[in-house]
Amino acid sequence: MPIRHLALNVEPLRPATSTERQTLFRALINSAIGVGAFLLTCIGLHAVLPFPQIDGVSQKLRFFAAHKDEFDTLFIGSSRIYFQISPAIFDGVIRESGSPMRSFNFGIGGMHLPESAYVLEQVLNTKPRNLRWVFIELGELQTKWPHEAAGSRRALYWHDWRRTSLILRKVLGSGTHMVWLPNLKKVRDIILPRKSGLETRDLFIFHMAELEKNFANVATGSDILDYFSRRDINKDSAKYLGAAGDGYVPMTNKGMSASQTATYEHALALVMAQNGWRSISPYTMEACRQCAQKIRGIGAVPIFLITPSTTRFNVTYLDNARPPGVVMAFNDPRVYPNLYRSSVRLDEDHLTKEGAEEFTRIMAANFMHLVQAGEIK
Figure 1 (cartoon, rainbow, N blue to C red):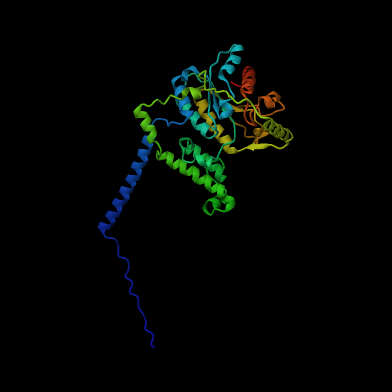
Figure 2 (tube, one colour):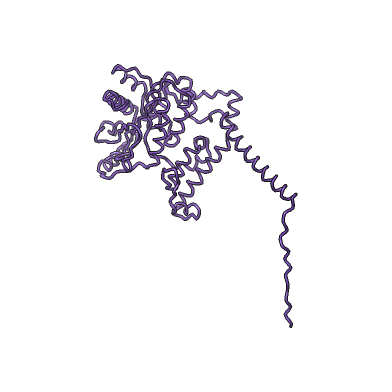
């Protein structure tokens, strides 16, 4: 059978007509206008929307804003601050030395860096005229959040670019320099996830998603409704402000059980026997630097506070890069044995009411010593 040669007749692409070029140009212009309008709308809404209703944070922020010029000292951090520093006792110790002081406890359960840094900025944005000292809990920058918190208002509201970029740098191992140099293995774990790299991928996706939703003002409908309906948004204030209205709420737990005490004392013995050191990451140091810069910007003094905890024993700093401010550390059981007695502990990280009051007195006395010695100015 003869083989026939098949010839394909392929027509060359014709150039776009003037009308088609104009249509494409208009489509691009309209798309750019749409994107720009969306971005401007998001930015505008961020500027005018009320602060979201975040349990504990909102109540304390509103109270502080209403009384901002009455306080000269602020404590900010997690439950280790919230339940463990009594402003009344702290102020009393300082007053006995002849220096009147009024402090406020802005501790919130589970509020670590970088969330605490965001809240600090909101507090400072109220422009307190008499704020002189700001104590910030020093702890490692947190990248992990409980899965059940994903998409919640608590996980969402603080995800601005400053906070999220620092978290992403830590997740990617990019360093804190201006130019991002991510660890190539971590980039691979995101693009081509393996079983060993799923955590990196999940953290990257989680924080990017929270940033996008926060920028797009997702879940702000209830905030707008609260604002215009004039709901009683202060009804739970006493719950978070405490009986004295100073932000301190003492722990009501009676202490550890016999089995918990045995577990604690075993853990404490292991910690006391440790010789190695655990370094605080450069990402935490960068977060501290940003906090200190904001605090000094209003004329106040930053003080970094490490609370009595066995999980923070033997903390050191990479390349001697200490935080940009005085560090008051109470995480050594050898130096502060009374704060590590099982009778004043609830667990490895928290003190009973009695222990919290003792800690506050010791911390206040140490603070006054540093001030009088000229180490805190």
